[in-house]
Amino acid sequence: MKRVHNFSAGPAVLPIEVLEKAQSELIDYQNSGMSVMEMSHRSGDFDDIINRAEANLRTLMDIPQNYKVLFLQGGASSQFAMVPLNLFGKNKKADYINTGAWSKKAIAEAKKYGSVNVIGSSEDQTYNYIPDIKKLEFSSDADYVHITSNNTIYGTLYPEIPETGHVPLVCDMSSNILSQRYDVSKFGIIYAGAQKNIGPSGVTIVIIREDLIGQAMDITPTMFNYQTHAETKSMFNTPPCYGIYIAGLVFEHLLENGGVAEMEKRNIEKSALLYDYLDQSSLFRATVSKPYRSLMNVPFVTGNEDLDKEFIQEAELMNLKTLKGHRSVGGMRASIYNAMPLEGVQALVDFMDKFEKKHS
Image (cartoon, rainbow, N blue to C red):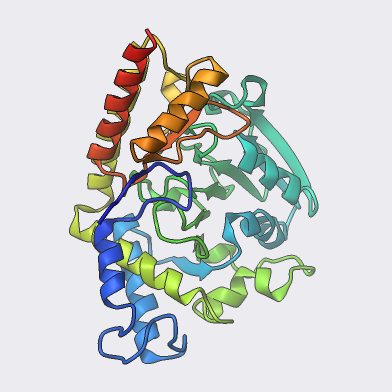
């Protein structure tokens, strides 16, 4: 069996053990005589699948009991609208910190429903840093504050989470959920698309404090109301059943391998291996300032577009796949999510070293 090292930003690499387990159950899920893709979401078998997935996610993230866990559809992009539609019930005002393309899209969507105050932005330097949260002026009358904890395209990570007091903190955690420990109680809402650290695209996880449910604006569509999904336990309509099943397998795999604390340790080791090489390299350069470097997404460049293209082409031949950087940054980007083994990062560094020596 040939497996490449897949550095895609998403959909991303999954644990081989999870894929093998899913393969073994593809046609006949635990003697049910059918695949999970075929079974009713109202069946006892699927009820067990989704309940176990929620319970294991709660354990992994130590989610307090006064938070609901929802398995939704529409990707994190749908949350750009769902958040303001559900939280603009009071002052119709929110603070946003603009740290990349996705937070910028979230800002644009929220402006359709209320007043958005962009209290900080790193757009002036192509989002290669996180604004100093200690210098930002938060609005005391905001309905919520919104951040993007990890910026997939630009490779930045909040070094610390803002303290927002009585104002709920909403976080798009799509590209680093389960990669490091967070205190869930510091957030009003955490949402994440599954296709980085959780499973295939199609599932969106929403972790929401119960007191924030039931405040939706009158114009909120039924499917965009958190209360709709909280009251029906994510079963208002047919959920993304197979994606939830795979997510559940990933959660089990993480629990069997030390949980989030162990993933954080491994991710620090993997990212350090790559960043240490970049910092001593005379050819390659990391694009993000050191205090804000992501554990998950590592953009880097040579400074020569032709050389970047050559590197990407040759890396493909070495089974180092999907290393092309986003067009807004250029160069290369290695996404090293939980399921990327240390060996994959080492293989990349070894190839980079050979490539550098060839062009020195």
